[in-house]
Length: 423
Image (tube, rainbow, N blue to C red; front, side, top):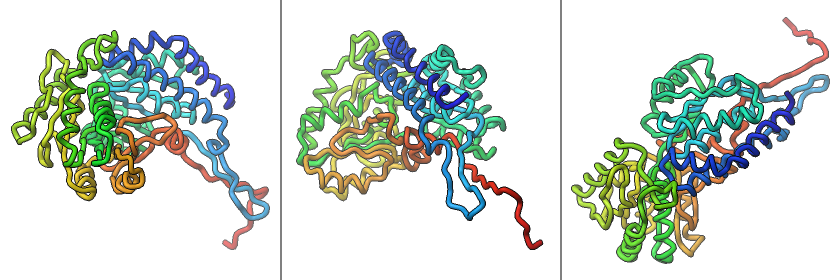
């Protein structure tokens, strides 16, 4: 099958997603506990990812390059697929975070075994398989492997799988890297974050509070890029915290998939207990509860903690819940030090009308993705995505990285006849 025929499969899959848009969006929202808007966002990004994968196949640099060589010899480098790629995807944005690996891996010529999170096997697995089946993907190139951690471990051990791409928690990512490393597999890790948002003293308080609220509470805070630390200059921290708490009280919690509320449930009881324990322990350590800290069933109220300091669990840990953590600072230097204390390094943001100052501060933050005058949750599929430190092993997801990630170079030389050597 030639590149045009391959590209047509991805374009057909995108067309099927367009036709089934409303149905897919509602299913994703229901299975993930997200809002309908969140489900629609995942389907929109799915369509973009499929079309981008089709575009990969017409890129000259994705196939090979002629290299300088001596007369009478052809020298070139060509790409070839790894073989079988194992994709282990998470529950929070299962459709997008599965497909962003599945689509480019297939486009690069690999077969794929997809293991979705057991809590979201439809959105993260079978919907994708169905789109490709309807589009005419040849049988045997994509397999969905439902299961828990043992299924992922089997992928990491199997010598027929040449690469593993994993999106999930840092603790699980370390286990994946360990298991895959023992078999010398290529590994791509996109892990957690404790993403700082720095708000300087000249920031517009209403804009700053709006950005912080969106970054901290979107999809109940269950996003690797969620704003995990809100670092606010001490001269405005009290006024800012009041505005943020007012926003928290105004947000509704309930069936977000039906449009009845802004926030839905956390994914399971274990995650709810983790979130509440972090909040409780931080309060015992001296943090102040401005609002929230309560739950009913799996529905956790948007929460604001102030007076948080290094050493408290809310400062140190990725919460993965709707908890805004407010920390004050007195100088740019202190803000940088507080932001860089974390072992994570995924996303960071700075808000200030002084773009030069904000950019200079941002340049010193250890992160894989930096946003000036925005919050920390951002991904447009065309960007390289990834972090440093405990957030993963580099910006390896996204359009600019796809060919390098899912194929490798082979150097080839061709002569008309073998030369005579002096041996």
